[in-house]
Image (tube, rainbow, N blue to C red; front, side, top):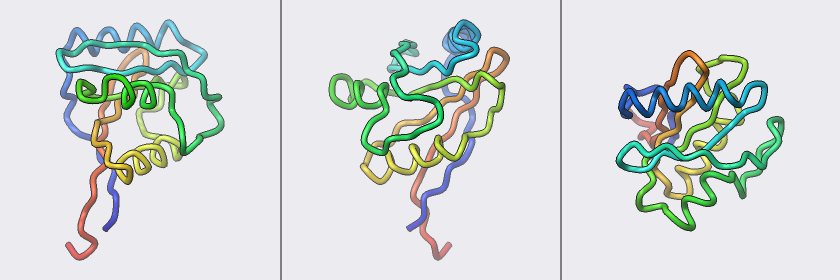
Length: 127
């Protein structure tokens, strides 16, 4: 089985999208992150990882949510201060790690101007 990362139609409401753009703008030049709960509740968490390094065993927003609020978690989000809407290699690695661990929430990337959503899914290598 292979894990494919694909951009999907944005599943959150306009109000949540606007809030994510505001948080992304307020965080510039730093990356900010958080979670979105059902009901489109946007929460920002401290970003304790440095932007250049990914630790397969932790990501603050995901770690907090899976331990405390996992059942209500709709998506996690983070900003790209430079404006890229594409997942970085680090983002892709994180998405694949979460799917391998059985966590199937979407990943949202926010910039001050736009918000996009991605999902990572297993696909059969024979199709």
